[in-house]
Amino acid sequence: MLINQRKADAQTLAETVTAKTAAESAQKKAQQEAAAANAAKADDDTKLTTANASIADLTTQLSTTKQALTDAQTASQTATAAATAAQAKLDAISATLNGASPQDLVDQKNKALSDLQAAQAEQKIIQDQLQAEQAQVAALQDAINRSNDHGKMPGVSGKVTFVDHAWNFVILDVGLSAGVVPNGELIVYRNKTFLGKVRVTKVDPNDAVAEILPDIKGDIQIGDAVLN
Image 1 (tube, rainbow, N blue to C red):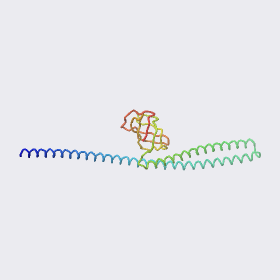
Image 2: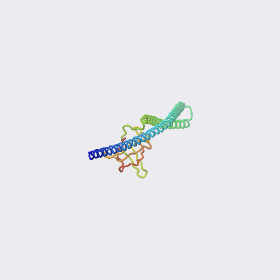
Image 3: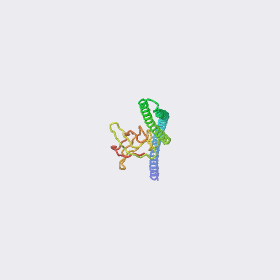
Image 4: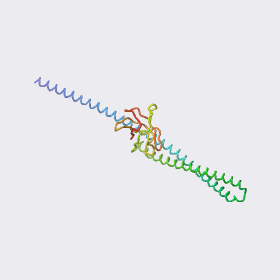
C-alpha cells in the first residue's frame, strides 16, 4: 500500500512539473507577443510622425507656388499692357506717315514694330510660365490630399531611370502626378524578385529622387520596377 502511495505521489509530482513547465512557456510566449506589439506601435508612431512632416512640407511648397503664380499673373498683365501700348503707338505712326519726314517716320514705325514683337514674345513666355505654375499648384494640392492618409501613396508604379551607388540614390520616372510624396517609401523589384526599398527625398510633377535604404537585398539597376 505504501508503494502505491509513493507511485501516486511521484505521478502527482511529474504532473506538477509538467504544468509548471507549460505555464513558464506560456508566460514567455506572452512576454514575446507583448514586446512585438510594443515594437509595432512604435513603428506606427514613427510612420505617423513622418506623414505629418510630409504634409507640412507640401503645404509650404503649395504656399510658395501660389505666390509664384500670383507674380506670374501680375507680370502677364504688365506684358499685355506693354503690347497694347506698342500696338497703339504703331497705329499712330502709321496714321501720320504721310504728314512727316518719310525716313523719320519709317524709323519710328520700325522701332515700334520691334517693341511690339518683343512685348508679344515676353507675353508668350510669361503665359507659358503662368500655365506651368497653375499645373504645379494643382499637382501640389493633389499630393497634399493624398498625404492626409498618413503618407500613403496609392497605386504608385514606375521604374528606375538612374542609379548612383556611390551616393546611394536613384531617380524614378514617377512624381507628384502619379501620387509620389516626399518621405514616402517604395519597394524595388526585378522579375518578381525583391531587391530593396527606397525613400523619396525630392519629388517633381513627373519624376523623383529617392535614397536607397540600408536593408538592400540586391543590386538595383536602371529599368528595375518600383511600387508601393
